[in-house]
View 1 (cartoon, rainbow over the protein chains, first blue to last red):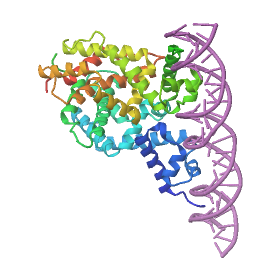
View 2: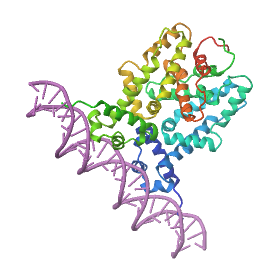
View 3: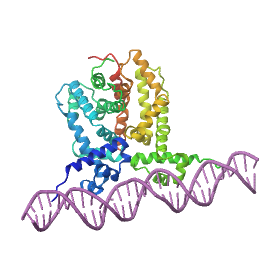
View 4: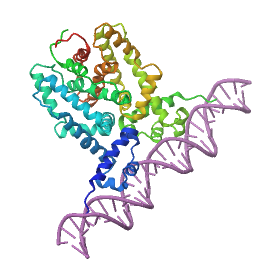
Length: 198
Length: 198
DNA sequence: GCTATAAGTAAATGAACATTTACTTATAAT
DNA sequence: ATTATAAGTAAATGTTCATTTACTTATAGC
């Protein structure tokens, strides 16, 4: 039996991400992808059931999986709160900065109904993405270090500015600005840390 | 001369937003839109040059214009900082909550290259969207009330959690959760207000 | 009430779409 | 070396796409 050519599989994924990042998800077609990846359209269908299957696997496995791994590298739930958050931000920034096409698909994960539903399904079935971060926040709430808010609120306060600022980062690549600084991370921490002056 | 039927123009816009919100920007076609809006495809081309023109006008005029108006209603640059931010959050929450289809297109404005570029072009040409908010933050920096950070960082810290939490809001419409609370808004303010304990 | 004119329609255009058919190729196991 | 089989290709399928053509309709200004 002829073995799968993994280079072709990788080319399909990489080039799909390229097209999505540069032309938009709404301009990705199977024929364009096949031509750009130098394979026959049929080859894509050997590896993926259909277009939906390709998009969902790209998003969940290729992108979110790698993002989770990268963001948690060297992170330990038992770290001091500010140290932990700083680590997560720096990991996230490094990863997204070096993987602009992944960043683009992550953004589509928030807008496209297909990808959004896939993310929620995955998050419910497989325990959650980013479970160590969930536990990290939980234990810091219990220790009285940070405010007791719903987890989604904590996550939004602490991490949504990062994704937002990445857009700024990529928009100013020519005249690069230091936009993600320790002071911004500290500001994020201040949002949730208890014992602020009123 | 036969006059334009404004109801048809509004139907096209409303139903385009519906399709984008429910099926995704990637599944909006001119023919599907025409059929759903009960007009001939040609009618859309009387009012819009082509598909790009329709999407950009939908995004910039119909959605961002209305969003800006709604968010600034009753807001005054001279308000006390926390009062001002609270007003903006409540206005934004009310508006997005009642205009889910607009919210969906705003999210696509962050991911779709076409809409993203249109937003930046508009923001540069026409002075900026949300200029009063820019000035509000500026004057609070100058008065020493809040941290001196780049405007984009301030904006990300103070408002990106709102959009993020709206997703949560719409995902739990059946079993509604109070996710946007005064405590969350206060937390956002704490991120940027000066004079925190270290 | 005519008439000029832009608004509107139904149907058609050719290109591009997702997916499949019919065939060829590479290789692991015999 | 042969062979069974899944991987791969080129070309075709029928559908849907954005946009246009050829025509009809409503009405403002006379």
